[in-house]
Image (cartoon, rainbow, N blue to C red; front, side, top):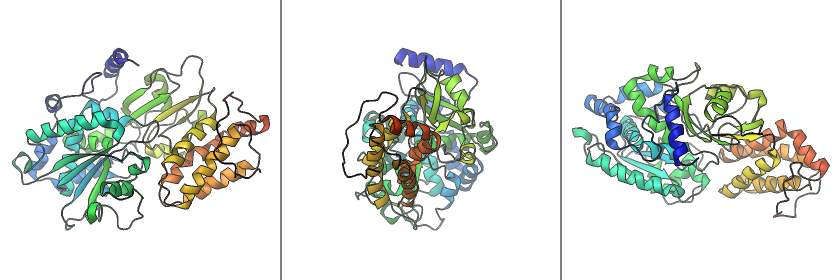
Length: 451
């Protein structure tokens, strides 16, 4: 969509009966100013909490709101905050994860461009809850424009007294630095990100100790996603029950930003109630399938989730509903595929990404992903054998023995390809070509077994 289309689309969204909380101040062609954010109640929560010294009140509200991490892991934020002990050493750190390198996921970038002071207040409130003195905003290098916006708006917040020494005349001091990532997907993993910030190789670390006990430079550290932190001011200002009431399902809480891409008429970012049905997102908000396209599958939460098929077209999009169905909501990034899409090629494309982005620390990831990639290439090129299928099934199970969650996420599309589209895989093998007419791709390795 061009800028005029985006402006019209946002105008239409604002007319719909969908609560716009995180996107309340969203404009088509500019960011919201600090004054606009303040006019809508921005920084009121920070003022009130600092004036009352209400750390316990704030932590209780976040826990009661059942705010689950929006970065993919869905860990309860309130529980994470409570693991920073009252007698934990100082300094303490808060890290905002804006690395967002999962294919198909772009919600945090849109949030950063829409209303940066929402994130700044969310970070300040979270820092107060754990008594952190330093905040670090870890952002991917491709988001250079967003990084510059944040540096400017952080300075404006500091000038207004919302950051820096003795914020708003209180005894609490907190400031934020913007740190540009080295630009690898593995840096989005919590412990790998902390290693990257300390100038070390970004390999994951297995707890214990947990980052909230010993994170950056051995000090207590909380790391949260952009969208999660942006929810905090609204919860503190309006209460836990209000936040839970925004969802359409009992197990859900709040709204969720769904980035939608693929074979739809209106790809984009949509703030919708948690628990809205997948079909409603595609048909009512993303404008339905493209002309001549029929729904085939989606990845419901980014590249590291399993394919959903027509069977789950009406599934409620919340963490609990997806989990009960054997799937994950992940980041909520919906990638839509139509009947003309080769699912082998789509899965191969994802595995190409994961094989490239592996940190190489453990054998399952380092050796397994390139092996899977080349086997899928052979199938896609018409050189596959029936014996490849049980090997791929075994590999998709074996990669769960990796050091961190990277490999299990990477093979989720593969596992669901074999589960839901096994006939399509076999058609590639029996026809000795891609039935969708895709041209052959280059083979990088001739050492694979000719099963």
